[in-house]
Length: 568
Image 1 (cartoon, helix red, strand yellow):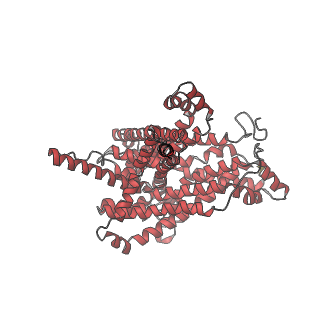
Image 2: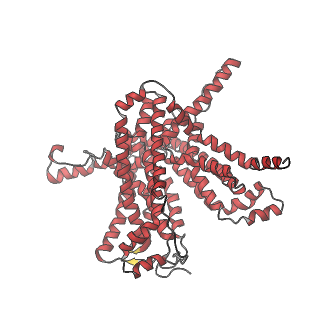
Image 3: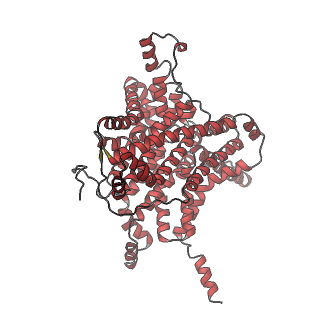
């Protein structure tokens, strides 16, 4: 008995090492803002909550739900339909649409909202042309849909968020075995019947994940709903925090918004709790490629072209035209400085997120301990939390630290330290890390899982430490995935608006906040060059993602081969 107790203790604490302890500490640090939001929200305060309940809260709930439903349905139809067409059908322009359908992902929702408001408002070119054509003189003589509305916000978000569903749906269709589709055709089902009866059920998990990401991005949006004056939870948090100067009220709204996110995750898992979809064969070759004819061909071209034209081409052309007209006003020293701020913050967050992601993923690989794996997953929770919610948590937690340090220095040294963390770029960087760490960790972990464990054993037998093995073997092997992860974090930080607006230091601007400020003041021309810069930074990962999906299927075509003659 005496000999088993030390052994039990050694087994309990066997996970203790630099990698495991570091992962647990990082995970705890990343979840501090979320815990802070829940704590402040549950702390009794003034009567702000009862005031919100009796005034704006019901409207926030209703508007947020309607916006999520509208965007969810729109992205589902466009994303899944276009993914099926370019994956399994043959029609003119298919190769171009494969990557072009991802381009709207580079366009932030708030940028496209500014562009279409400028085009479709009463004084815009569309309504002016209609009045000239039909002789109308006042708005009372005709009806035109109001762009600054709930429907307008849902349309703008649908145009730029459907690539999330398209991306995952197309990847799922590309992974499906051709045998099940051939069996469906043998049983007398046509292309569309095979789609609904076979391909769609097999791709359902990926589609659900894509729609869930879209809904989370919808909850996170601030620029669009603020510009259109659509009262959602995000806009409510911003208003209560900055305009009413009430931390507890903002935290309570953020906590309720957090329950929306939790509900989305649980609903997705509950919906497929007893459903399993498996491929029954490992036979892969190029997908059949149904040849479309007549009206079906024209409908496919039209259906794939519309999202690209309205989601990317037209806004990019309008912004380019404004940039040429207002070049002197747009290309000033302030814009270059704000661009430098954006690049600095985004690059810093990307490097830190990549380093932490590699550290955590390698810790999980080294030690298959449940606590390490669980804490690493727990640290990735921030990506599912809207930026406005995390911003409240970051300010509350860093503010408490600042007040503690300042109080200690005052008591012991009669010296005030002021704000060391909150209200600085450290707060913005920390917020970016909490939200986007999941991107780097997920990419690196997936890449590390593809490396055989025998390499670790061989390196250990040659006297290499875990750090040496990581530096000499694993990092060179995963550098492609690591670079992709860093690019994704960088671009998402460049586009991030709600978190930046709340956390940025006083008088500190980024491209995103600069564009939002000028476009909100109806000066889109002056902000056009900055908006184009944000879009330009977003195009690179779109190209990388498209190429990765196209070459992911065994037997799929590669450059130099036709779709009818797959590479061997």
